[in-house]
Amino acid sequence: MKKDFSPRLANYIDSHSHPKSKIVTVLCVLSILIIVLLLVNVGFNLIFKNVNLFSKTVIYIIDVLFVALLLIIRINIDNKKSEENIRSIRQGKFDFSYIKDWRLFTETIRVAKLIVAFKSESLRDQFDALHLDFEKNSVKISLEVHSDGDINVQEILENLQKEIEILFSQLPTNLYLYETPGGLFIQADVNLENMKLLEGSEFVSYSKY
Image (cartoon, rainbow, N blue to C red):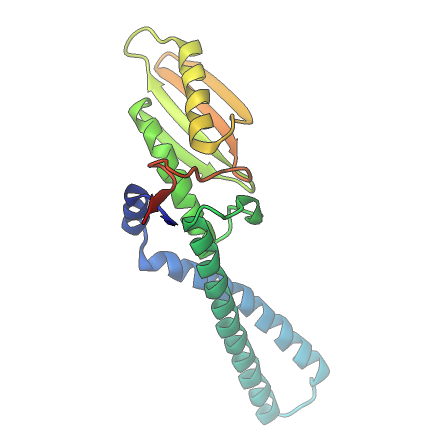
C-alpha cells in the first residue's frame, strides 16, 4: 500500500506552485551569501590593505567564486533535504516540529504552508473572510462574519474550535473575539508543531494500491 496526498490536496499544491516561489528561496540564500561575501572581502582588505590593484582584483574574483561555490553547495543541499522532507510529508511520516520557523523560505516550508492553507479552506464555507498569518511556530487564522441577522457567538466559537480540532488535531491555543456593528471578527492561534496528516482523510492523506 502506498500513501500519498489526496487528489484534492495534490491539485491544490500544484495549482499554487509557481516558479517564482523557488526563485524567492534562491534569492534569500543568495542574500545571506552576499553578506558573507562582504564580510570576507572586508577581512581580506584588512589583512592585505597595502596590496596593489592587481592583487585586489584577484581577491575580489576569489570572493565571487567562493560565494558562487557556497551558493551551489547550499542549493544542492537544500534541494536534497527538501525532496526527502516532502517525500516524508506525502507518506504522512513528517514531524512538523522539525520546522523551527514557519516564516522562512524553503521548499519544505512552502509545501507545509500550502497544506495549512488547504486545511483552512473548509472554513470559507462558514465565514465571509479568511486570512492566514504565519508566525514562528504557529498560524494565526483571522475570520470575519457579517451581521446580516442574529449571530449566536457561542455556537460559532464552539463550531470553530471543533473544526480546528478536526483539521489540525488540536484545539486553538488562543481565541480572540472582536464584535463590531458591522460584524464579528475572530482570531485563532494554532500551534503547527503538533499538526498531523490523518490517513484516510480527504484533507490530508490518501492511500492507494
